[in-house]
Image (cartoon, rainbow, N blue to C red; front, side):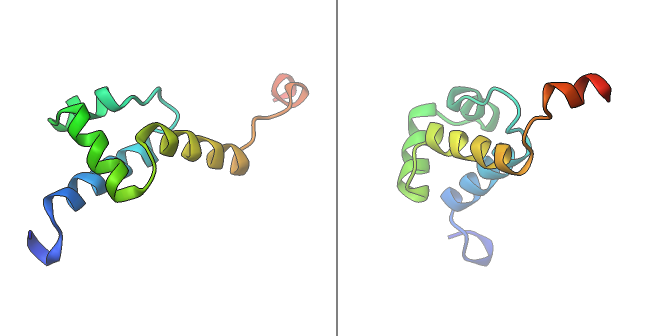
Amino acid sequence: MGALGNTAKDTILYDVLFYIDHHFIENIKLEGIASLFGYNSAYLGKIFTKSVGESFNSLVSINIGVVGIFYPPLPLKSQTQA
């Protein structure tokens, strides 16, 4: 166990979830995030699914969908007038 009762896996997941939350608009891929954080993508995918209960791709899709609910695109007419 790490500081304050957090395991290394908890820290990895927190960092990955934070990254997803702040880069949801980008084309996020498990391989890219694994490389960014220095992990094997298969390992990161397994601990992600086991801990979160959703696959990485499912969570990214859900996150993008939720953002779309709160920030829907402007209608075409409004975009041309802006």
